[in-house]
Length: 313
Image (cartoon, rainbow, N blue to C red):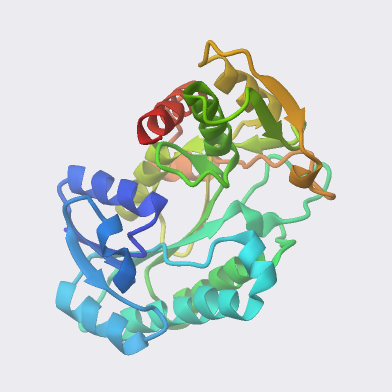
C-alpha cells in the first residue's frame, strides 16, 4: 500500500509519516521547497505547491497512491484574519486542486482523507455538547469558514463523481514538537525556560476556565490510518478524546512536572473576548466504524511535551 501525504512537513505530518511507515506502507510526503529539511522521517520527499493542479496530478500519476492525506493548509486563525484571501486560496482553491487531480488521475479508487477542524462548529448552542457530526456548522473565523467550505466541496465530489473521500474534523491535538502558540506546548515551554533560568519564575496565562478537548497527536495519526483502512466513504468524523477539561487542569498538570516554585499571572493580552465555555466532541462514530479511541493520557502528553522542550532548549 502507498500513501501520499500532501503537506507532510508540519507537526502532524511527521507523526503521520511514522505511523503509516510503521504499519508497513510506502509513504511519500510533499512540502514546499524551503521545507525539505523539516521532513526527517524516512519516506519519499517531493516539493509541491498545491496551487498548481497539474503538478499535483503529475505527482499522483508518478506515485500511484492508494490514499491521499490532504494536510496542507493555512491553519493559523490569526493569519486568516490578516490575510483572508490567501487563506481562502490555499484552503479552498488548493483543496479543489487536490480533488481535481485525484479525479483525473490514471489510478482510480484512490481514497482521500480531507483534514478539517473542530473549529468548523464555531459558535455552538449552549446545550450542543457533546457535538455530533450532524450539528449545524457555525464557523466564527475565516480559517474555520474555509475548512467548512472544503468539507462541503468534498461532499459534492462524493455525490457528483462517486469519489472515495472521508472528511475529518480534528479537535485540539498536542505533543512533542508542537509550536508554542498552542496552549499545552506554551505552558511546557514556559516551564522549561524557567528551569533553565532564561525566564523569571512567572507564567503568563489566559482564560483558565474554558473547557476544551485535547488528544495526543500520536493517537490522532492512528485515527487517520484507521480511517483509511476502515472508514466509510462520504462520512464526516470527529477526532478527539470526547472529554473536555478546563485549561486550569492543563496548567496544574504541567506544574506538577517541575520542582520549581512558579507564580501564575493572568495576561490580559491572552484573554479572548468571546471564549466559548465548553467545546466537546461526540466521538462515537469513529469508534463504531474503526474501533479507534484515544489511548495516551493527557498527563503523558504533557510530560513528553515538557521533556521535549527541556531537550530542545
